[in-house]
Image (cartoon, rainbow, N blue to C red; front, side, top):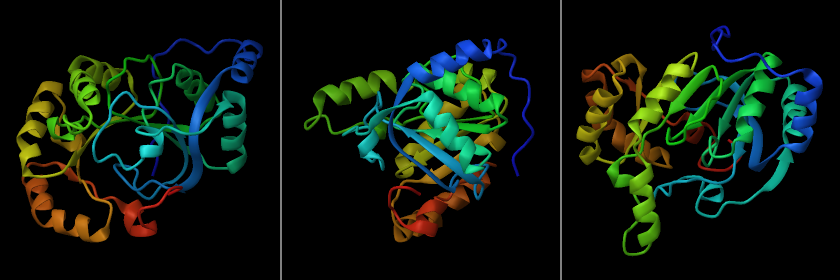
Length: 255
């Protein structure tokens, strides 16, 4: 189900001794790690080790992981500890998610070391941060205008969110340097559809790389949205993206 690793064109890794020292001293703030099945996108159904970093530079009003964004929590864990835990799990596919996993520069070293051990890496990002980072599937989820938090309740975050949410050039750079990619949108309503098409045009990506997912945290919400969103997606040649983790496990952590 996972495609073979390909040469990403990055510089060779530093000597093992140097990298080992960095791995012991470099840390990431982690809200949770767990083994589950990937529930979204091209690798749906793949057994995966999830590493969720804590902290985000955006504040989507519908964020389903507030413990990694609005109220970030978690302890700092060394890269060496994370790599060993993943290797010992026996799971090849690793999903680096958040929060915003490209926010900490230490994510670069984590991905480098995991790929050196033969792991296939998906990075789930909003595409707002420029990192020279190697992965096998870059999953970019651009945020619509409608994703901003309420301006009256959160004026500062409303302003910051709007300033940061759509750096097209950064998204294009992340796409170009990755072995493979997908662009995944969370649609809350029909008002998002025009902007979705504008973003795809600006990015210059083919319809086959676009995944369209309804905003919702229950089967009823997903089913209701699918009645109009699935046909719209099919008509334009995009991929419809259900949220299978909710159907399999419900809306809860560790899935």
